[in-house]
Amino acid sequence: MVAGISVGFSISFAAETAQVRITELDGKLRVEVGGELFAEYHYRGGSRPYLYPVLLPGGLAMTRNWPMKEAPGEDRDHPHHRSLWWAHGDVNGVDFWSESSKAGKTVHHQLLEATSGPEAGWIRTTNKLVGPDGKVVATDERTLRFMGRGDQRLLDFEVTIHASEGPLEFGDTKEGTMAIRLAETMRLKPNKDNAGRPTGRIVNSEGVRDGDTWGKRAKWVDYHGPVSGQTVGVAILDHPANPRHPTWWHVRDYGLFAANPFGIHDFEKRPAGTGNLKLAAGEKVTFRYRFVFHPGDEKQAGIAGLFAEYAASAQ
Image (tube, rainbow, N blue to C red; front, side, top):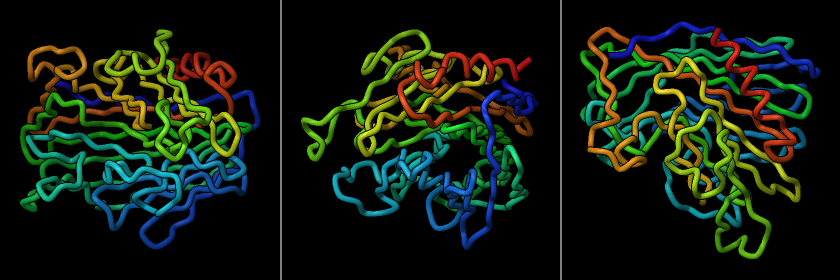
């Protein structure tokens, strides 16, 4: 059994930070950093809340457009890969990862906070995990913190899942969990429209690269590649206070990039159910991740140092 751990966000940057402005719109929240659009948080009209678009300065798109928007040169696979999101494929036997007729939905319940600030902005929400039969399986509370440091953009994503309706079990499946679907040109394996062009690279904190990073445990993973002729990247950092840190990574050559602490059976070919995580009724569990959107590769972005700084916030 796992109880939630209360660990606050902490950040101290030497580089110049930028004003963050969050504006409430119809069914979404617009996040601007230094006067430029960084992301929009959509909480209405989909199977789950998600962030789209996600942009670096200058409007460089870090995620795939489809299925939110039709765009040339993009594959139209996995319609549930909605830019940037949190979901898991087995919560009390209900699939919250896909968007099939038998899947559950994560339904926005309440906007608790949308706060702008000189160095960071916050969005806090509550949500209900609703099964295909209309019954609530669990509830969650999310805090998203947005920051700008120089030409980097950062997102701290914290989700606390409550076993509010009774005992809760996260099942052992690779289909999850803290995820982003990257821009098509960043892929390790190019799609047919990008064949012959430069491709992306993947590296983790242990020095493992490219396709070998799938299913491996690591403190962080960075996925970088070309967008509009520039090398840009995304790193996801697994907070040391998370259950089962360092986590496993469901990171694919076609641009899916996810931290998954549950899928041990798939990742390590262990007996089915090895990765199950159970909560008693009334318990809760918290997961925290930091996304770093950056120009250059993982070395140019200083990802190892940024992780060390992030890890210090666990103390």
